[in-house]
Image (cartoon, rainbow, N blue to C red; front, side, top):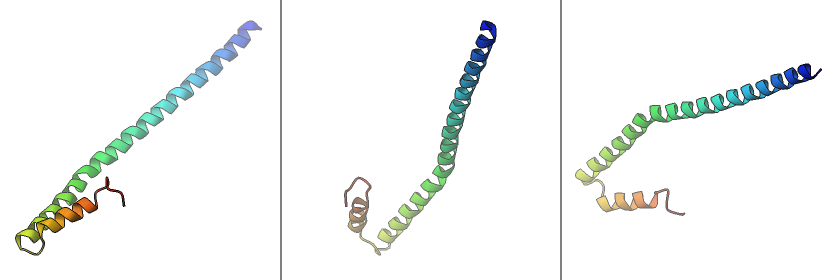
Length: 83
């Protein structure tokens, strides 16, 4: 009877260890997937930012916008600033 009980306990322990391992692997996979998505979006985000900067530069160059207006708007829209 002791051997049977030990076998059942061993099986239960193995199952819980396997479940814990699977959970850790799934969490690691989710983390990697989030990083992949972030890295895929990075060039697009940078391109949009550079395009915006180029547009502002052209407006300043063509005297359609004042450089101080851009600085004030950037400072007012910064995420660190409370509204």
